[in-house]
Image (cartoon, rainbow, N blue to C red; front, side, top):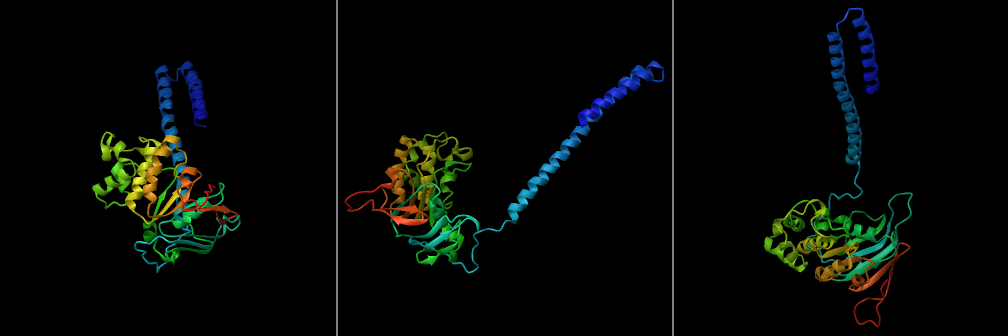
Length: 320
């Protein structure tokens, strides 16, 4: 519309100005001044139109932000919640049902599973069977629709969120690296840890050597999402962070997915160190990782189906 107004305005001024110049009521210089002024008039008009568009976009964005701020959290800490302290690590799913909404198909149905302290359980099943949902419930990102999820014999809903999540470390398939130095990323798990403890965790995770090779060592900025590191290196930094957290419960959600064969081989030993002595729920399709578990449980129809234990004095191993 502004372009059309500018074109029509310019043609009108030129037409009327030419007639005025021809009959002597306007000089040629006066016509040129009118044309010049008209050309300068449309720039502020364009800016005003752009400002209006920006205001509408900002208003629409503000509405979406307000919707998020007004959203009620699905997980709420109880007023009488207690601090867990350091948990022993016994996790129990007791006839847990879970759905993501009133009109959705149940993801977990009568799901019962117990993990004893220090045990590593591999949770297997097809995509969409509820493996990651069970892992998220251990961090209390979701509450059961029915049934109970216990930690050391206490309903997780009776514990404070801060103390519960302090007792659970998580290693995802995509290592979460924040913008900052290597030191900041590893100490994110425990900011009050000393540099000696941080380096010890990095050594155990097999990350110390490549960190020292970086331009500024542990002070090196890793960039957005750790783009200056390879996938395997990012995963080892995440393992070092989990080691530093020293939580009694560990969730490994597809930690080797997306890594090439060499990178997967590099993280097997650090993962063994990480899981030693910790109650571990392993979600993976990688046979090399699954065979490290004490036993394997398959989710079928939302229920936990035990399979043959993978370690110990068993006649055979079953990889699911």
